Length: 193
Length: 90
Image (tube, rainbow over all chains, first blue to last red; front, side, top):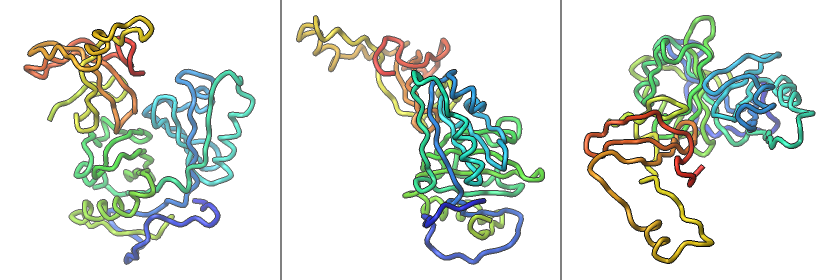
């Protein structure tokens, strides 16, 4: 994934990186992230086309997440994200819509592995079973007591989660996730890996 | 654990929400008497039974909603209503 210029990750401790394992955690905070807000049921909602709790793949590897009613996170390569945000141009000016670059304000971690749901259930009160949160589901919840947006984006059938939190909580949450995943053999992958 | 039905997120652990207290009407500032303001600010019915109250889904959808809870049994009845039923918080 693309990294913004001069981005400094909130995860500053050094770890022993691994190239693979049954459960992987990676810091992807440098990935371009935009936050779009508009009216529920408005024209911006039509263009974002991802109702609350769901997500869709946009062109070029970008992903639109319906993170809250009238609120969307656009994440992915910078060019593709810019294209999605540009699709808001030309809206009726009577609808109040905002789009801000969130890249430097939010940490983003990826958790991947068959035991990822079980690991998340240790630190989050939501039901992460396939029936409740299938691939493409988006939810906001407390993860290790930090309010996060969590999106499921499976890769080749492997449960994979994107976890967004305020960057000031990034280091703490990264360490908390390592602790939670220890019993499942969690390994730390290369940043943005 | 108390499962609170959020109209947007579904049942959520009460720790994910903020309790907003009893839902009651805000008097018109232009016409309210000091006694009415005092009642609005400080007086609560506090029944041991059914009560309309407001909650804020702080970890989920970040929206206020109103629901009816039995304060004696923690049962809920009627679907939760987005916003404040009586026109206060939005």
